[in-house]
Length: 177
Image (cartoon, rainbow, N blue to C red; front, side, top):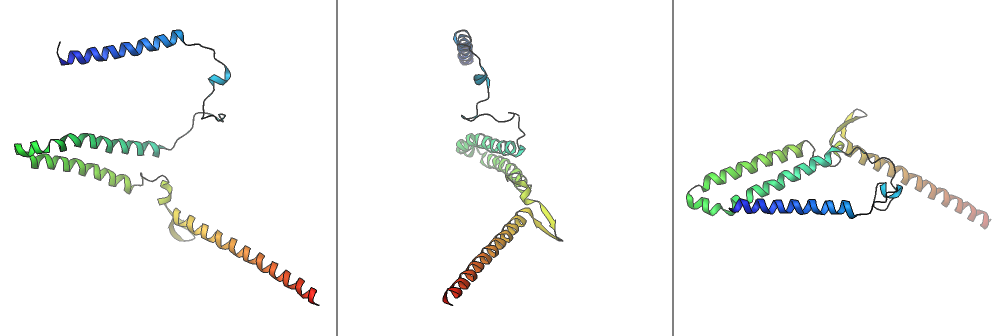
């Protein structure tokens, strides 16, 4: 039997073992379904609403970008390990150029994703708004609104303190008279 035959026997044995265990569980495991067992498990919390939710596609996009760069490392690593052999054979410049072009294409993809805002969790922050005749970003507008709200709160607190101090000074004048 050759090397591939051994691999086939190993995979066949693994598949047979998995099927045997799954069949055994189906036969031996107790089945007592009830309402609580059939409900969705959410980390000990009572499930609220439907389990069908719309997720932002950005999570998937970031995961795909991660996988692309993870696979890039897997593809580049063997070439880097054997680079000295390629140098000795006189192919060093060609291999270096191939890896450089491979990394450059991936880098251009990263720049494209970054430029279009695909790497940001809040993509809408980059969008421009026209507010009161001027163009601003949502992030800047929200910061300005927060500052303005802070100014209003500060003015309100200052007015309350001034009113209380005026009231106390009037009471003190009445007490002195």
